[in-house]
Image 1 (cartoon, one colour):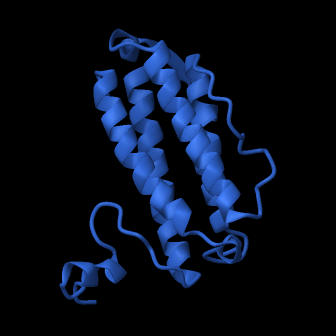
Image 2: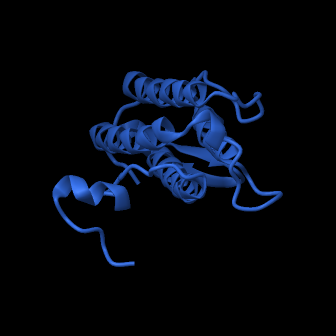
Length: 167
């Protein structure tokens, strides 16, 4: 749970940079990759991440005008990345402009529960991390190089003149 706007802004910047790297590595051809038949595709998971930002945060009174999950999913990886950048930037701007540290203690009805806004921001970030991780598995199945987010990915160890961890 976040207790200051500054703390959230720093964490949000780090998370959106990580998710942005994942989104930027997608290709148009990879968007249909799914772990199995009748499971979400890379495009659907990416679009769910994007649509969750306004869906969750508009419940708190913010106005994040970005694509909804129910909107048509673009067939272009670049368009998906643009939509993510727009939603993430809009949320940061809304929080910075409309909330204070005290606002993070305000409680909202979230899915039949009462959450402090600082908790809602944390849950939104954890939700994004969860789905971003799912995306990396599908990216490997699609033959894409996965960028490191919290450290080097398998392909990036060479940049540090190190051997990748043993498999």
